[in-house]
Image 1: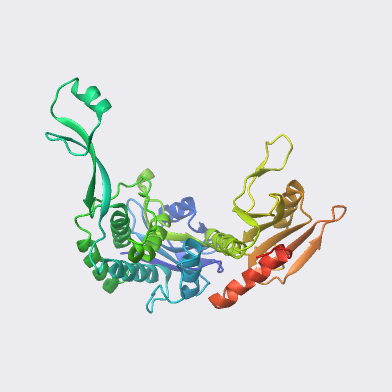
Image 2: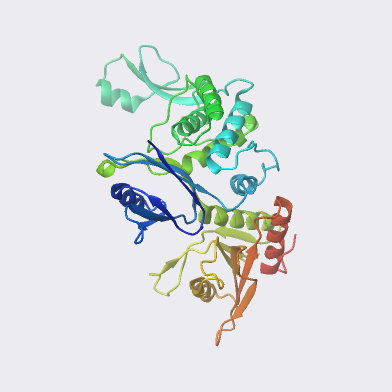
Length: 401
């Protein structure tokens, strides 16, 4: 019997009857905060943080447990954040269909299947793939070094390399991997699973990817335009997969989004897009050092450079204020370090809107002002991007288009 635990992102902890082995496995996985319930024997308190999605855990000798964590952000808004982060130029509102699903994994599976179906309606994309082979006839070019190393001067077989025109290309391999990944995840609705099986059949002749290896590279072109939205979503599926392992007999299978990372990606990409048409340059995760010896590394989420190449603004994205009374003080200390090392008079902390209001703090004896601003993720895409533009002009009021 499968135990299903339903949690909400950053909601209060709930008490759930669980075997000790399963509770310890959940605690070790760090998917949620898990601890024995001091008031109920045989129960564990579970609290979700910023990871959302669904995972299934199987412990030897125990019943499997499925944990589903729903985001606070509406599903449609979540997919806007995802879509804009991975492809700000190709994103269009309403392009990704999530159906009537209110949970993340069913909505994602539905969206991926619809995009894959749209990509494959005109047939599988073909392209050239580099092939290295041994053959009895020459095709393409002879790999002379390999011929000498492997054949010791023999004429046949011949070590050759050539470009093959085939459907077994990176784009199709990525789509197949995403479809197969979704088929293994818990919580995919039956009708969506049936459609995913149909898509896998269409991709049956494509070579599967080897787990653990990097995804094959592809480049956006006019020829693969109909694939691009599906490929972006496929990458989300493959990047967001939870670890699959059997260490100590524990098996974990699932899909999780880190909302902290997603919010950071959206804020920095959206700011970069605003400044793209100006005389300023944005660098994301820009490496610097706090000390003169270069031993203390730091990476602000975004550093804005002026036309002359010197830092002019710095910003860090923080998904959630951890205190009910306001923003965490540790964020202020971190931003103060960024401003000091970069020689800036102002720094900007960008939060997802919570309980705390906008604030600005002038640091004593330093003259540095740290701004704390909040984006309202409940607003529509156009309004949300408008807030990003307002923030951008506050960071660089003198930027010219």
